Amino acid sequence: MIGKPEWFTYRVFGWGTRPKTWQGWVYIAVWLAIWAIIAVLPIPNPIKAWILGIVIGIGVLDTLHIMTKLNKVHDERENLHQLIIERNCSFAAIAALVVVAIFQTISNPSVVGIPFDTSIIVVLAAMLVAKVGTTAYVKMRL
Image 1 (cartoon, helix red, strand yellow):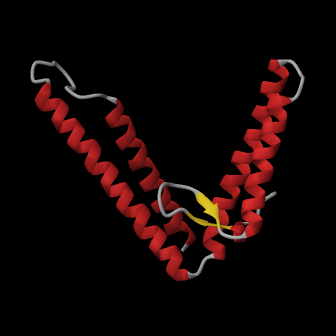
Image 2 (tube, one colour):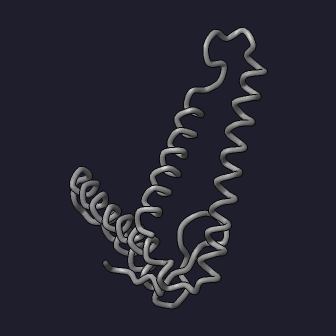
Image 3 (cartoon, one colour):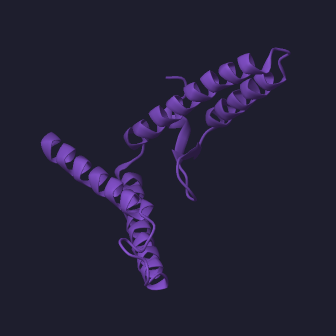
């Protein structure tokens, strides 16, 4: 699309990407400048909101495009490290959700039915669907 994956690398802290080259920094600066210019334009707020929404949408789509192409511009070792990081984050998220569910169950012994926040089940189910879907896709591609 607009940005090139070669300009970015994986973030060390958090998720997403960060600029790796001067072109990546210019790319970020141009997006911020566009948003700032739109924000100060003397046009009615509803129109400004639509324009800003479209520009932000394009930026999000471009970022997602860059993120999906990162593994093709990094060497095998960097990709493996990123996979290990993502796996460990997933394990930590599952462990945290299970601990919260157990804590809420112990804290609410008089609750009839599910004694913990049902959104925990939704998140765990979404993670399971993503895991099963991704596994099936990878197995079909091999």
